[in-house]
Image (cartoon, rainbow, N blue to C red; front, top):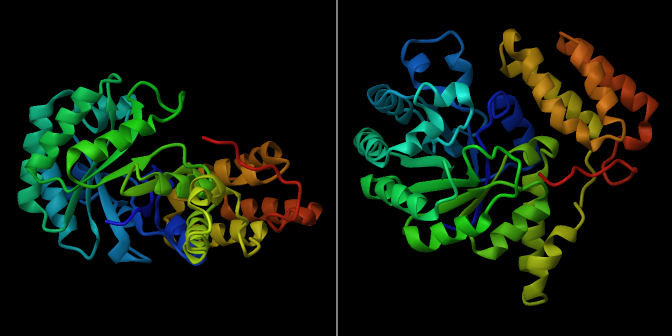
Length: 346
């Protein structure tokens, strides 16, 4: 597969409203959903229809499942596999203590045979692409990681996404992209990399490095929903330049300017509108706060705006905060035409 650009699965963020926003800028190659509880899906939980909404591009959507029970995961995967989608992904990387304590998420990485047995059961139930997203493990032990991934590949997993940090590291240290590259060389199936992709330039540099088959962006895509469109334009410009810079792709790709201005106010208000349309009222406040915790980093007075948004409980109030801010700071409306600070690297 060519090196693609994927939206990472993120709790309270990788829902239809964000996908619609990103798609409006040109989209990406694949969208992963936020993690879907296998047990809740099978029991008909009240919000599962929102979690499994495949729009706007079902053919690009990858459903991500989380759970500790093998049979529940297999049944849930079969149910989602029957829908129009690009594939089914199993979460073996979530390091949240509440998830790990149940035996789900990264807890799967503690037992190679248990994980391999699950993958085998899933392979029999899933006709579309089967993938797994994981971390390096409890410790920085590449040999163990490779054995674990080989067992999954032998069982029929077709794509591994590696977030190259240990379970305990969260985001405290830089992602070990050398592990992604090495896993790609030695595994024999496509490998995607996730971590430290804060800008379009980061995406292009990772793609140019040959370290992976796809680059996944998470928080960077929330801060800059246009990140994939920008990266794709950079790649197109590089290809158009032909041989004008073999080094230019690796070193200069991230310096290219986005060729079209981004209206930060319109983008923010568009997200509020999409959230109202495509998420239940019970989710509005939490999802909006999560989004703007990252998106507001584009603004000079980010902390102030986040504080004001945090006081609002309704989307209408949040829209008012944003409208007032840009009324008072019109110079910040267009990205690239103000002194607005750039998001710091993840």
